[in-house]
Amino acid sequence: MKKIEAVIKPFKLDDVKEALNEIGVQGMTISEVKGYGRQKGHKEIYRGAEYVVDFIPKVKIEIVLPAERIEEVVEVIRKAAVTDKIGDGKIFVTPVESVVRVRTGETGPDAI
Amino acid sequence: MDTGDTAFMLVAAALVMFMTPGLALFYGGLVRSRNVLSTILQSFICLGLVSLIWVTYGYTLAFGTDVGGMIGNLEYLFLNGVGTDPGPYSDTIPHLLFVAFQLMFAVITAALITGAFAERIRFSAFLVFTFFWTTFIYLPVCHWVWGGGWIGEHGTLDFAGGTVIHINSAVAALAAAIVIGPRKGWGREAMPPHNVSMTVMGAGILWLGWFGFNAGSALAADGIAVNAFMTTQIAAGAAAFSWLLYEWKFHGKPTALGAASGAVAGLVAITPAAGFVSPMAAIVIGLVAGVICCLAIRMKALFRYDDALDVVAIHGVGGLWGALATGLFASLAINPDGANGLFYGNPGQLGIQLIDALAVIAFSLVGSLIILKLIDRFIGLRVSEEEERQGLDLSQHSEVGYTL
Image 1: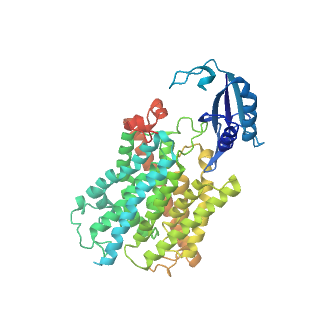
Image 2: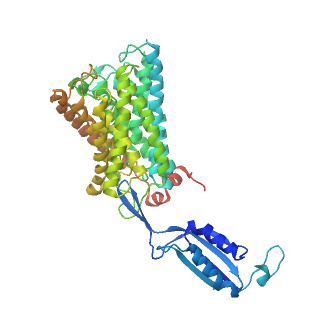
Image 3: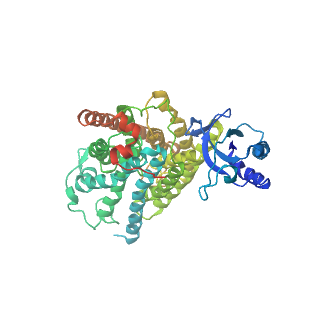
């Protein structure tokens, strides 16, 4: 099993969710996060004084899937989230040791 | 007694009262969230402290019978002899109503200064400062201009308090910013406003209240009041617009904070002139106020003083411009009890306006510096560095503005 963590632009969340629904991805966890990469921050101006705000709001999607589906799902997320402008985000894939469903106690891929 | 005038002045006094909580929101939105309540409270509590000063000994020192051009006598101590019959300042409204109207002015003047030392003053020191400043600076200056003192006798026109309120408080703000020193991290860390929506709402309340402030200064529901009402609206709107356009052109984007700041700058500038100039003059006064007050904000970076919420740039520069503009645009055709200004063939009026404004600046600056230095010596003006980092809401009041 693997976990996908996709950090994307917030306004792209709906597109990504719909695209994942279409290919049968069952669930996801999202959180509002802040950060920056090459995009850096944005500028705010108050009474003529400029402030650089480093951390920009993003949405992080977390999905755990059987390893064989990862390639397909990453590509679907990438296509749905891309705007071709700087700051579109990153997708990380990491191994997952175990998953437990709280209600039934099932473990492994059955619990996803 | 005139019931129409009385009804109008009751409403005007209430409107001026509303400016102080409006100012609290205006200032409260401009500070960082950890100081929002302390900033709001500094304005709000002036309604308590200054009210007590005013009705015990304040009113009589400001408006009692003149003693040597400098101060009022003690005939109205504890409002002795002040009742619901008309007093010496108006034949048509109760004397007590005049006291109430002027009380609201004294309250907001003290509150205006708090923008300079926001985010770092000890609450106890702030209360002591407000007590001494109102007693030793506001009361004499108010008497000089309106209570039969030397500035009024000299012929200065100050319809609703450009000099008494705005220049006076802004000079005290400058003194306070210098004595108390900049906020920790000033010039290195970003200190953006935590809630500009609150600030714009506060500016809207100030604008509303200003109709009471300026129109009410006619002390009657008459044509002068109507003229003051219109010049107030026009100058505020023009200044909001010119500030916005100026920053759009020179800082890249039009901002809500700019429009709100501009509106207040325009309101300040029209205050001394409101009952003496025409609506068309108000356009010029407002347009100029928006631009010069926006420019004036750069002064604090130039001179290295941290006037946290720009009291000097908006109330000082705006008030001084208004005082001079009164000397330019005043017209006997608008108000036969006023005077003609430079553009109506009386250049001397401009000189009178300038000299008297400079006199108030000198008095307020020196007096405020002395008061601040004494408080710093005996009580200490400033919170500790740790308390400042923690925020004044927690360190001074054990409460927080937001639990989200």
